[in-house]
Length: 218
Image 1 (tube, rainbow, N blue to C red):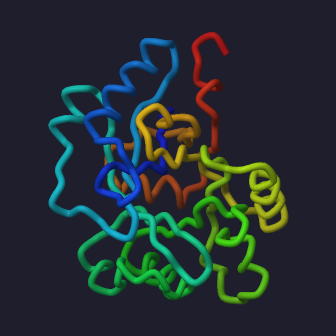
Image 2: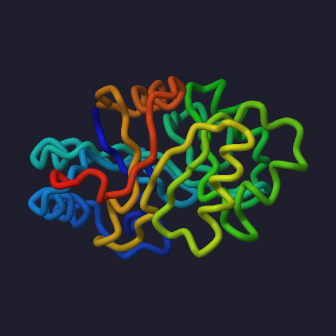
C-alpha cells in the first residue's frame, strides 16, 4: 500500500512558492505527527522538467518524488502522468488551448495517462464540458479529491464520478508547503516510477483519501 499526493506545484510553476526540498521536509513533519505520506508527483503548469532530477533528494529522505504536468485544454485542466519526450514532441505543453480529446488519445498512444483535474471546478472543470463531447471514452479516471476545492465543487465531482463510473484520485493541488498531502491517492501496490504509476492508474486499484485517514490514530 502507498499514499501518494498526485497533484503538487513547486516554484517551477508560475504561481507556487514552494520548493521541492521544502515539500520533502514537510513530509517529514507530517510523518512525525503520525500521518503517512509516501510520496508526491510534481505536476507543473504547462511544462515537464526533463532537466530536473530529484532522485538523490528522494532517496536521502525516503520520499518518492515523481514528475508529471498540468495542462490547459479546451475542456479544462488535465493532469498528465508518464510524460515522455515523444509525447512532448506530439503535444505542445505550453498551448493553453489544447484539444482535450487529442491530448487524451496522444497520452494513451505514448504510454501516458491524462486525468481531468478538479473536474467540479466552476468555469474550468471537466464537468462543464464532458456532456457536450462524445469522444471522451478514453477518460476513465478523474481527480475526485482536490485540496483546493471550493464549496459545491466536491459535490459536482462526486456526481460526475457516480454517473460515469470513473475512477477517482486525490491530490492536494499544493502551491504552498503546508498544503502537501491534504488529499492523496491510496494505491494497493508499490509504486517506484512514473511508468508504474500509469500502470496503477490504468489498473484501477486505488482510491482517494484525505490526510486524516492516514493517521495512525484514525
